[in-house]
Each structure stands twice: as C-alpha cells, then as structure tokens.
Length: 231
Length: 409
Ligand SMILES: Nc1ncnc2c1ncn2[C@@H]1O[C@H](COP(=O)(O)OP(=O)(O)O)[C@@H](O)[C@H]1O
Ligand SMILES: [Mg+2]
Image (tube, rainbow over all chains, first blue to last red; front, side, top):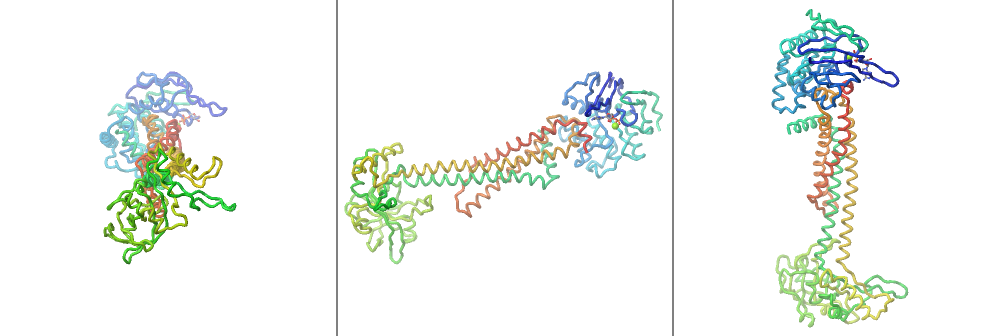
C-alpha cells in the first residue's frame, strides 16, 4: 500500500472557533492508482492533499506512507520524503518567477545534492517528457498557462517521484489546456506507473480518474471505483 | 561545494533583481568599512610619525631649560632668563653617574653666506658630544674635536637643507662660509633627518663649537651663559635616575632650598613623545571604535533589507520547501545573501577607505598608513556583521510553514 490513513484528523483553531478540516479520514491508495478527489469548496480536499503529501501534519490519527508512519516526523525528514518521493502540482503553478523553465524543473535536484551538470541533463529530460523541448530557457511569464503547468509537472517528475499530487491543476486553464494536462497525467500514470492524485471540483477533469473519492465536511462520503470512463 | 556555488549564484541573482536596494544596503557597509580603514590609517600615520620622531630626536635625552623667573610679581615663561652656564654643564657631566654625555647649547638664528648665496638658519653652539647626544651621523667630513671647543675654532657642521641652499650639488666640506660675517670652515655634512613632528625641517641647521658661539656669534652679557643643556642618559632605564640627579645637582649649585622654586627645568623629551605616542594609540582605537559604529549601523541596514526580502519572497520559500528544501537549506540561502551583501560591501569599502586615506594625505597633509591588519580587521568585522545581522532573517525564513508560505500572495 502506498498511502494508508487511519482516522486522520486535522483541526484548526482560529480565535474561539474550531474548524475540523479533516474529521476521521480512512483511505488506502495503491501504487499505480489514478485517484480523483472531489467535493465542495471547504470540504477538506486541500487539507487532505497537504497531509498525505507530507507538507502538513495531522492533528491526530495515523498516516502510513509506503508502510511507514510519517504522521509525527520532523520537518526536515518530511522535506526529504517530499524531495525523493513526491511531486506537487498546484492550481497557481508555483514556479519561481525569475528562474527559467529548466532551472525551475531542476530545483528539487538542488536539494538532493545532485551535481550541476546532472541537474541540467535530468531537467532537460523531464521537460522533454512533458513536451516542452525548446522552451527550457523561457521564464514562466514567457509561457502560456498550460505550458507553465507542464513545467510544474516536469518538476514533479524530475526526481523520479512515486506519486504526484495535483491540487486543482486545471483550475487556471482553459478547456483545451485542461484536457492536455489531464491527458499528460494519464500518460504518466499508464506509461511510467506513477501514482496520481488529482483534486478537482470539475466533473470533466475528474472523469480521467479510475477512482473518485468525495469529501464533505472533512469526511469521505463516497469512494467510487467505477470512474475512468475516459473522455 | 556544489550546493555552495548554486546558493551563491541564487544569492547574487536575488540581489541583482533589486540592484538599487542592494547597493544602498551595501553602502552602509561600504561607509563603515571605509571609515574604519581611513580612521585607523590616520591614527597609524600619526603614531608612526611620533615613533620616527622619537628615533630622530636622539634616544634617552633630557633637556635642561632655564626656568621661569618671577620678576616684580610677573612670572615669565620658561627660558626667559639665562640661568644656566657652562659650569653647570660640566658639573652634570662629572657628577651625575647616570649621565653618559652632556652638551651645552647656545643658539639663535643667523644669516649664513657662501659666495653670493645666503641662507637664514638656526645656528647651534654645542659641545663635542653633540653628535652622540642627538644620534646624528655625518655624510662626509669629521665631527668636532676637544681642540675645536677649547680653542673656539671657527668650524661648523651643516645640515642637508643648508648645504642644498648654499652649495647645490657641491660637497661643502672644506669650504668657507660666513656666519654673521665671521668666516667658518665647513668640516662636515650631517646625514638628513627629515621633518620633525611639528613639521620642522631638522636638516635646516648649523652646529658650531659652543665657545665660538659665545665669543663670536651670540655674545651675551654674562660670559659662560648657555641657553639650554642637552643630557644623554646611559640607557633608557637610567633616564629617571639621570633626571633626579640633574635636578638635585642643579638645585644645590643654584642654592635652591627644598621648598624653593627651581630656576630651571629638566624635560624628558623621549618620555613626552612616548606619552604622545600612547595617547595617539588610544586616539586611533577611539576613532576606529567610532567608525565601527557606522559599520554596525550598516549591519542593521542589512538585517532590515533581509527581513523585507524574506517577507517578499515568502512564496518562493514555500515553493523551495515543497520540493524538498530543508530548514538549513533555506537558512543557508538567506545567510549567504546577507554575507554576499556584507562581503561585496566590505571589498568596495576597503577601496573607499584606501582612497579616503589618500585624499586625507593629499588635502590635509596628514600621514596615513594602511596596515594589512586594519584591512583584515575591517573586512573580518564586516563579515561578522553580515553573519550576525543576516542570521535572524534567515532563521525566520527557515521557520516558515510551507503551506502558509505557498498561500502567501
Ligand atoms: N490554515 C488554516 N487555518 C484555519 N482554517 C483553515 C486553514 N486551512 C483550511 N482551513 C479550513 O479548513 C477547511 C477545509 O479547507 P480546505 O482543505 O482548503 O478545503 P478545500 O480545499 O476542499 O476547498 C475550510 O473550512 C477552511 O476554512
Ligand atoms: Mg482547496
């Protein structure tokens, strides 16, 4: 099992109000799955992604990543897991504005102490894998939204991540670019066996998934394994 | 190493984005380092000048001056009365065991003429041991002999400046000059000593036998009167002993009781200069310390800008953390950025300090000396300032929560 959560809870306290963002989440994801995460705004999708993506820690409950309990690890160990195993793709791309596409893609390698020459080579390979050859010296502002999101995907791929977390990856893209990005995820999932978890509230985007879980008020209310009708 | 080069490049690029801001921040360090170097250079220059002065003055030297004399209720300045004579000088030489050599001095300003060249200079009547006492050497010729003094010979030793003005490139020894119309044979040329602390040309001088000065040049009402007595102690350790021996002897000779006011004074010039040297060193430290304050202010400027930078780049920090930057990676990145500011500031500051020292020397005429130590000190201090003031912003950046950082607009 790649991901397994047991009674995962995340509670935020803002002043006097207590927000239960995750309210006892139990879910298991196997290697090679393509999982869609749906649910209304504020239902806890992003919080879930951040916890299972090792960006955040649960208030209580257990989280096993590759069978290892990571719910109480220190920030540096979590950083190392993110660096070696996990790739993130965000709605707002989150690229470094002053760095070129190649430099952005190479960023994770900088923190795993890969030599400069190898960094450049592997970044180029990752850019090629997402169909961005020839754009390696472009800065984010010189790229379209769809291209920027591909740079982000290449960055997620560059360290041979086992899993990619995408939080509303098509939220800022038009229909065509959205479709291309989702097709890219499908290809990575099918050809490279990379596990993909995509948060979305758009049914079209969700339709690419083989399995869809639905959140409501911090709980999983549906787990539908009959997705993947394709489009 | 790989990480260091990349981190340094990231730092330079980040600073380059805000060129003006980075430069203004560095300016604080530039001024600080420049000021430290210039101040230390001025102080070092002054204390070297004094040290040099001590060595040119003649070592272990005491000067006996006629004391202030109260006449009709009005106290006259030191040396206004001729209260010292040849016999005093001879007595000091004979009776003070800590004294090595003594020379009476009778001096004044006189016109020295050679052919149709003439030069007005200080003429010093002195004893046979004047060269020993003042640590003077001869470029050519010979010193005074006992015979010269006894016979009031019309011979003189001249300084380089006098020689230049009267003889040009010619060797003056053996030539005849006229001092107050009296013909003198130049028997020696003194080695140049340069300027004194007060900017006086120490080579603008003529020495003649004391006896000749008394009889022919500066005749006084009272035979045997001298203007001052120079005393050389046997060693630096003997100076205090020599001083008290001379004091006691002259009090006795001048019949001054234990409570009476002396009509002479004994001055330890070396000691006075050493005190001056000491206070110059303190002054240098003080100037350096004041200049360091501006370096400190520069450091606060770095801290301020780094804090702003951390806030501005919160999202960047979040992205770096999301892809695996550890706490120390982020901390290191911002620390290197602060250090880059202070390092380049320090380098430019060194140049500014060196330039400022030249300008001070050129405009004010003060000697300035830049030592490797002062450069090392200033640069090292600016590095410390960078680390000290860069650490807190870097620490703050590294403690950011990646999710909140990513959400930051
Ligand atoms: N840092 C936070 N502090 C307080 N409340 C938060 C924080 N992050 C999320 N929440 C709350 O947790 C709930 C779930 O948020 P989120 O996971 O972002 O929902 P979704 O992504 O499904 O829209 C929301 O009610 C939100 O207001
Ligand atoms: Mg969300």
